[in-house]
Every structure is written in C-alpha cells, then in structure tokens.
Length: 279
Image 1 (spheres, rainbow, N blue to C red):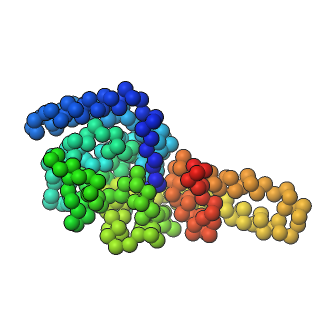
Image 2 (cartoon, rainbow, N blue to C red; image 1 turned 60 degrees about the vertical axis):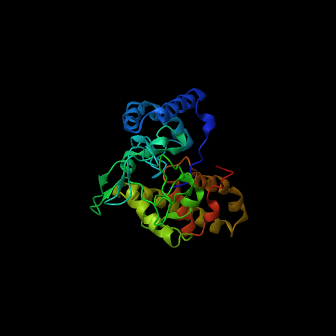
Image 3 (cartoon, rainbow, N blue to C red; image 1 turned 45 degrees about the vertical axis):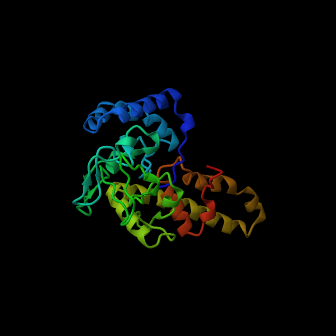
C-alpha cells in the first residue's frame, strides 16, 4: 500500500454534478426507499472508475496490483448499505449518505474488495461490507455524520499517516512498519486480512519485484566498488542510468512500488527511493 493523492481536477464537472444531483435526490427520500435508490443508480459511481484509475496509475489503491492483472471495482471505503463491525454486529443501513460521494470511493482489485478464501491461512479475506471501528470510536449515522471523528480499523490509502503504519516484510508479506505502535498494530493486522493484502499470488508478486531490485542494486554496488580502483573505468560507468533504473522501480506508477522501496531500505539504499516531488 502506498499513498494515493486524490485529484478532483481530472474528474469532468458533468460527472461531479450528476453525483451531486443523485445525492440531493437521496436526501429527499424516506428511509425505506434509500437502499433501492442507491442500488438502481450504481452506474454513477462506476463512471468514476477511469478517473480513480488515473490517480493511482491503473493500480488497486489497496494492494498496488495493476489493472492489467486484475479486474478493479469502485469500492465504497465506508460501505453504503450495511457496515459489518465484527462477527456479530452489522449496522443497517450503512453510510448511505456517502453512496455518491466520490471522496468515499477507492479503486480496488476484486480480491481486495470481495470476500475470498486465502489458500494459505484458510481464512476469508476481502473487504466486502466490513468496516470495524477502533474500540471507543464515535460512530457516524444518517442523523450524525461525524465521519471525521471516527477511527476506522481499516487503513486508508488516501491518508499518508495510515500508509506510514504498514510496510512490506522480507518474506513479501505485509506487516507493521517501524512507526507502528499500540492500537495501530491491530489496525494493520485487520487491514491485511480484510483487504486481502497477503493472498499468496500477491505475496509472490512482491517477492519478484524485491528480487529484481536486489539484483539491480547488487550490480550497482559491484560496479561502484570496481570504479574505486580505476579512474578510466569510473568515467565510463553509466552510474546515472543504473541509479535511474532503480529509482524507477519505486515510482508510484510501478506495481508493488512499496515492495521495491522496502527492499532498498533493508539493503541500506533508502536514498534511492523516489521522493514525493520526483513522483
């Protein structure tokens, strides 16, 4: 998971106006008519898919899988019709007032968005309508829409402070970063399961990226070492091209850029990660 910067500027005003009109209509409906209205107007949030994709270079906002490798859904971060808090509690309705709010949309690979069994753990991964809150958190509802005061268990890729809590481990799995403490560790664990971040093929894809980055970095290190003993060789070594090749693997447009960045940090080459201004 890496930070995704949302950009309303690339969304056509006509589409934003259509979503706003749907929201205004929803506000006028009686309680028992809202769910059906939302279901009948799913084409509105689906129309945002291409623009959400542009914001993440065609990658799932949760897993970093590319669109070429996975069908992507427009996920409602806060579920629109029901919100499952734990194995027993399911709030109905959910966050209906956010059904047409593009700021509640996240582009999600189907294996992150839809429940699926993990072959390694035999647990059910996938977000679905799952949206637990940290113990003691305020809980928003139609009458009190205090979403800014809620403390979700699931990490949000649009919040840099959340993304900082999770990192790729040496075995390709996701886990708490060195900046993660206390309740946030439980949030990371919950997010890994509910967003399907450790499904076997996803883990293997990260490991492939990490091995490639290690190979590139090892070649660079050996080349620089050899250059120390011969100025003529040093002048001919394409250092900048080699460094650029490594930097490119960490760019947010690359699948599993978080894995590439993690590998570089583990090898002591964290300075070869693309900086925000470069991205």
